[in-house]
Length: 253
Image (tube, rainbow, N blue to C red; front, side, top):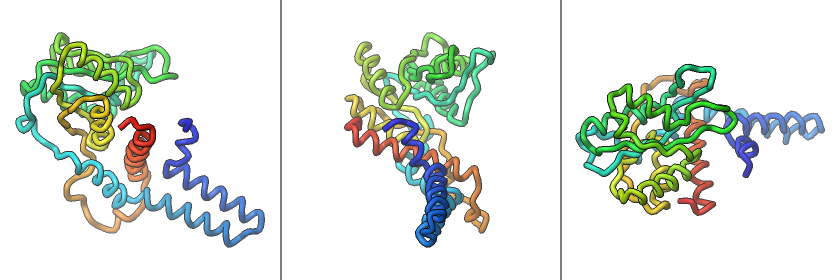
């Protein structure tokens, strides 16, 4: 399915589509049916926009992989950090980081704790953004700033999807006869990542980070009031669920 069509399934787009259809149907004088479509669209948007639902849907994905300290992680041959944290333009002197930069930070923690002697960064250059650093190269600059020596950083600069991360890294590991790896990515993204790497013939050890949902969320009526932040957060969970289903359909996991 083309990306433009797949985006229509996302909560905001699908709700707007239902509302638009409802208005159109009402104009065609099928008032009850049109009103029903509008109510469904508004209800759908409300559900995904409430903090209580957003925390639940994200927590259901994140809770599969516990937050462990670096001391609790086993030793491995390499640490693999999946990209998705940096945006870069040739007009900017430095890349901009998102919340997912925790992936690189955790990779550095594991390295400094002696859990593996090398860090493999996987991530290419997003199409349409023009010249600039690849995700992996921007991440390497960040790791060097965190005290990781450049000689301990390996780059995989082709992958643009989670599946490509797994395929490209698997080839690199096979070339260097590396078997045991710690897989670092956001907790929300870990299920799809683990499945993709296992499908590529690897048996990674999950090292989840970038947790979004606190173990004991705050309570109160405000958690039932919709807001843009909750919608954005729950949409990320929707993206992961939809991505996993798509990978399953294509036999990529």
